[in-house]
Every structure is written in structure tokens, then in C-alpha cells.
Length: 130
Image 1 (cartoon, rainbow, N blue to C red):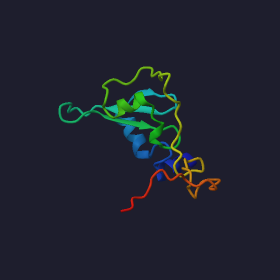
Image 2: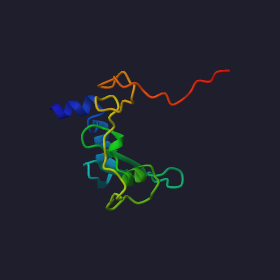
Image 3: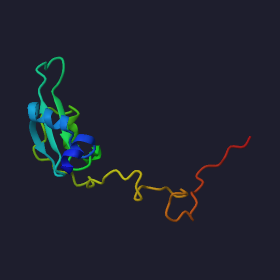
Image 4: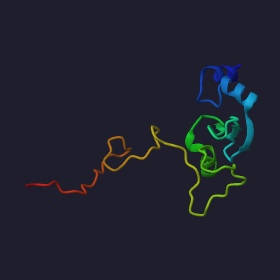
């Protein structure tokens, strides 16, 4: 019952009832990424006028930064075929969720929101004087 109410009244918890119905009727499951997000497509029938519709159903809270780079290219029509097995390069960092608005967000030196604001920011400029 709780899951039904979440799908009926919220859009940020997975999928809504409308998305579930559209996915059931017209969606073709393309793949799943390492975070559990499921990717779908639906051909429009007018390939010259409009490309196919592509969407993602997030596993948990809907956060766009959870889409890996390979799937990001596919969902934005940068590549035609979905990534078979995306392997991160050695220089790529693992995913970190968007921390804006949380206590773990970046606070520059001198910010009043910093945990210990005792260190003022460095003045890296000199004011112009005529």
C-alpha cells in the first residue's frame, strides 16, 4: 500500500503510475546499469521526424547524476546503440552523488557555513587604486 501511495503522489521515488503504465504498454527494456537503474526505449514510427523516446527508471530516489557516462551518452542520443558493458577508465573516479544542500557539500575557505570557519579566505587579488 505504501509503494502504491508513493507512486501515486510522488515523482522522485522511482516511477509514477503513468510512467509504469506507459512503460508496460510501449517500453522496450534495453538494459540495467550498476546502480540498478533500468533503461527503456519506445520507437516513434517516424524515424525521419522524431527519434525514439528513451527514458530511465531510477532505482530509489530520482537523481540524474546516478547515470553512468556510457548510459548518459545513449539516453541523450549521442550514440545509437546502448552500451553493452561499460568499463570505467583508470583515470575515472567512482560515482559520488550530488552533495549540494547536504552537510557534506563543499564549503570553500572563509565560508560561514564551514564547520570551522576560523580560517578566512586568502585574498588572491589586490584592489585597484587610481
